[in-house]
Each structure stands twice: as C-alpha cells, then as structure tokens.
Length: 187
Image (cartoon, rainbow, N blue to C red):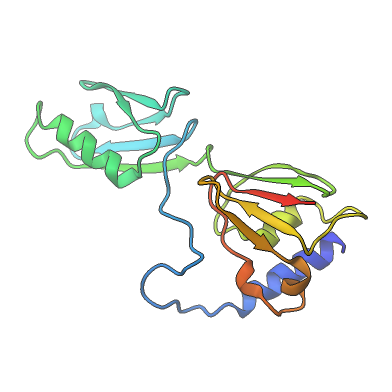
C-alpha cells in the first residue's frame, strides 16, 4: 500500500470522527502528559519574575530552581510538579502561584519497527494514531504482514492492530491514540 493511500485513509478516518466527544476520557485516549527527560518546561511563579524561567529536564530527571535547588520533574504531570514547587516555595513566600507548561515535549516519542520503508523514532505530535505513525514510517515493505501488527505500550501491554480490517473500515477502533514510548511492530 502506498504512502498516499495511507495518508488518504488516515485523513478520511479523522474526518469521520465526530467532533463532539462524550464527557470523560475515551477508552483509547492516552493518559495525561508525563514529563520526561529532555522536555523543556516553562515555570511561572506569579509576581516573581526571578522565579519565572525555562528549564530543561536533565538526564537524571531533575530540574534546578532558584531557592529550591534540584527537584524531580520526570515522571510527574505538569500540575503535580507545579503543586510540588508551590509547596516548597511556601518556605520563602506566602501563597506562591506556580504554573508549569511543557514548551517542548522532547521526550514524547513513538517507534515504528519492522517491515516499513522508513522505520524509526518519531516525535509524538498532537493526537497521533497508529495509522498516522505508519504513514510517517513510509508504508509497508513488500513482505510485511499488515494483519499482524502489534503496539507494545510502555507498561508492556500489547494491543493487536490489523491494518487490513482498519483499512476496510471494519474495525477502526484499533486505530488508537498513541502514547509516549509506544512501539509499533510490523512483522
């Protein structure tokens, strides 16, 4: 199947997705963002310009903040990190208001391996699905088995993906949203 066909199918499937989602997280939605190594964070402390800065999460998972020193950032959500920073800053000021945003999600990557034209590591940008990742990997090689694809999650759970059934519109629920660290294996 050509790259153009993959992209056309991915775009048509996205167009058929209803705009209004029911309340709550859909079953195939990835978990909230988890800060990882190499991410660039914007930390804002309200009315404290000296404590408002951009930091990069180091390889040891830590960031360095004025007054606080090293704080673990990797493995936490932005809201959790903001709450932890606010708690620590209470030693120095009354009611600190801290906001943490992810300026660059450098740690969010997905991997496509196996019988693809361009297997490799791809940045997880926006709402990436399995079809979109397969399209980025350039389509299948001649001897690929698109009906036997699996997605291996960070927690080692395995999701089957049958490209043929999805392409025929028979089981599009397999076209799940990918999470950071997911590996798509194309035998």
